[in-house]
Each structure stands twice: as C-alpha cells, then as structure tokens.
Length: 108
Image 1 (tube, rainbow, N blue to C red):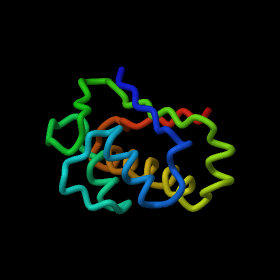
Image 2 (tube, helix red, strand yellow):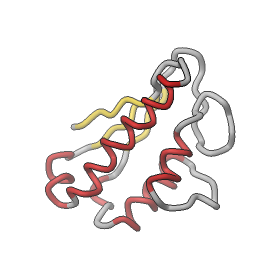
Image 3 (cartoon, rainbow, N blue to C red):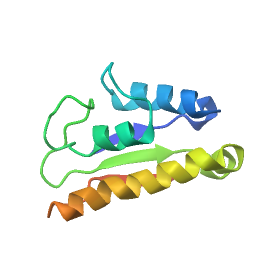
Image 4 (tube, rainbow, N blue to C red):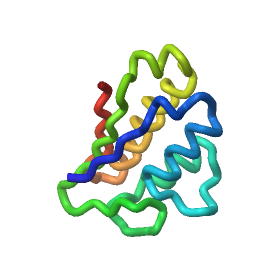
C-alpha cells in the first residue's frame, strides 16, 4: 500500500496547496498548479507515466492522509472542498475506464 500525507498546517492558499501536493506526490516540474493538472497527475497511478512518484501495483491504493481536516476545511473551505471533489473525480475516471478506483482519502 502507498501512503501520502498532506501537511495541512502548511496549506493557507492555493499556491501553498499546490506546493505541498507537488512535493508530496512528486508531480513533475511542468505541473500546471491547478486542479485540472492535479487530476491528470493522479489519474494514471498504475501506468508509471512519470506524473507522480507513486506507481501502484495491481489492487493497490494510494491512501492520502489529511490530518486536522476539520480545522483545514474551516480555514480554507474552497481548497478542502476541491480536494474532496477532485479525488472523487479521479476515482470516477478509473471507474469509467472499467478499472478499480485508486485514491482513498483518510480524513483525520
């Protein structure tokens, strides 16, 4: 199993969110720093496409740990909502491709 932890204490705006995500997920230097690019980088975790440091094996999930989610969502509600929605969208893409969803958010 693969794990990534978003340090929510470091996230105060969109720029810091994308900085943390690029670091944690190992997004490439050309990462577009928007939620469409975030979705694209996490859509093919089982294909070793170089868009993330994670390459998932068959049946494997990426668990994204989100500590202090209640405080995080109160501080930056738009970003917290986007994280939930875009994670769901990534999983929807997997399902549409007749593949198992790969992302699992763990809200702490």
